[in-house]
Every structure is written in structure tokens, then in C-alpha cells.
Length: 72
Image (cartoon, rainbow, N blue to C red; front, side):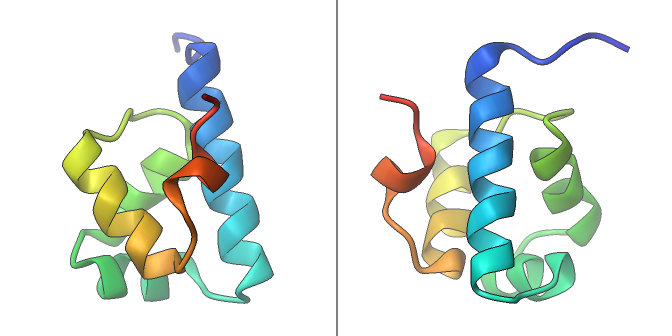
């Protein structure tokens, strides 16, 4: 398995942290964002890098700002 790049790993950790702060499950975030729960889990594990459109959906579902998730 390939190691994720630093940005993907950072985004993954920030998504997980934000979800845990809101006490939501991965399924709840996925449903709120209108995406597949397995795909959302891959985002948190940094095995998939989200597109900007996908990141926008997830950030909105988590009710955080993109600046809370992105490393720049």
C-alpha cells in the first residue's frame, strides 16, 4: 500500500477530528454529504484524495470551514 502524501494525510486527520468533535458517525457524515460511506471512510484513512467538489460537500456536512481542514 502506498503512503499518502502529506496533504492527503493532513486532510484525512482533520476530517476525522472534525467528525469526532461533532460526535457524528462516518455514516451520518456520508449521508449528510450525499456520498457513499465507504468512500468517506477512505477519505479519513487517506486512501483516497477528495476532489474540491467532494471536499466542499464533506466540509459542509461537518459544519466546519475549509480552512479548518486544508493545510494552507
